[in-house]
Image (cartoon, rainbow, N blue to C red; front, side):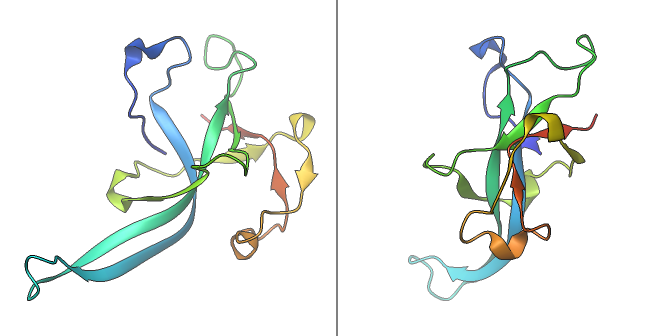
Length: 126
């Protein structure tokens, strides 16, 4: 869970957070081309971004948990890198069995999914 980089004025679908699944946490020792004698450790996370399901109302007033699911594999930004300091906290996801279908994991993500399956939607526990 990270803070959304959107403005509250962008419409009714505004939500204060973005969600992603962390596939790995890495570090690299890098140097800037202007200062070849200084090395810096750079930490980053490899993530799979999730989308919010806005097809039904959710939240305290609707008495329903929000639903999220992975972006489709044909979307250009489904995987990305993230600064670990941007992560606010982890969240508890509950599989939405009634609203999901089970399918094999995407290639490249097989080793990061202990269930060996992917789901379309998850409930975001509040």
